[in-house]
Length: 380
Image (cartoon, rainbow, N blue to C red; front, top):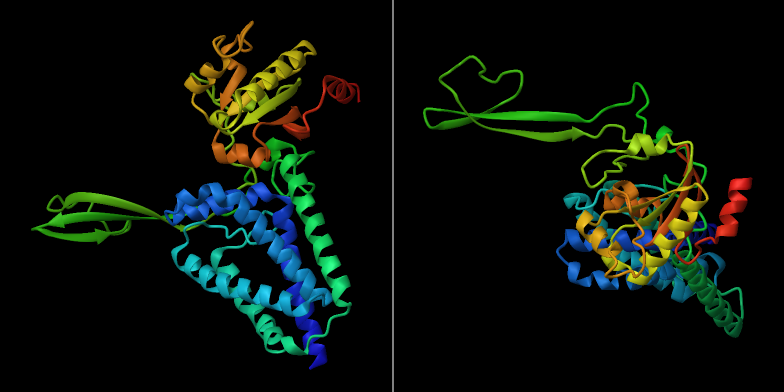
């Protein structure tokens, strides 16, 4: 029985610590995932609370795991993980049935699980959790009560500092496709022989007031007595999707400049803002002025945003920014999918330096480099 308790503590503790840690590494990713779920269930009015939900969830998971694994206030830790399991196990069952969001996000972007995989993972994890809950009064702490609270408070403070560091700057571990050192074109390729999306098409025809469904194999192509009504196509099986997809740089004329930019032999700095309206105008002004300095060094500079071209032009006209307009050419900014921009850098705005399609460096707004740092990068 003692061995079972130890094994259960290790399994439950490690899973919850890992789950909380990877969410804390990328708290904005967890915020986005909460937003996806709230939108799917028509609860978008709670979106302003997503950051609070994200911080609260990963902190509870991490501290609950620490408590269970190391026997620090074990009863509190067991109650914490049990309540979390009691909430999320039935919830993941509902998600598996309805599939409003394809990836559960329970392990952040470190490990991607489908909703059914998440549900079965929770069912398996519920077994050692239930065992610990039944035996919770037999768990003896490894520390004195005063020391336990000191450890818990210190762990909480350090964990929150870690979360806010990753929020202010960028995740200390980048689980996303656009990590430093990535050669972007390579990540956009579908390898030969990989499965492709499989679709099934159903045709609806009507004859003598009666409608019937046909497939591509048996539809009445040459029978004029049948009248075509509708055609429906559904995805039967998902094929291989490259790590980087849906990446296009489109100028305001609708021209796709992706290949041209990724093939450029110049250093290129992107200023990335998923939504200009969510950023203070002062930050946009400073960022574009920084871009002008980079241009003087021979570095290409572009603003990437999902905001409309009209919004971009509003932000760069002299009525907002005094002095010479920052953007003088049409191709100084590009429209990019919002989800792609969120994936490229977890900051609004953020910066990404590339050369010949390879990501050289990334910065959040708070960590934006000075010109001397850029010069050192060029020299090296």
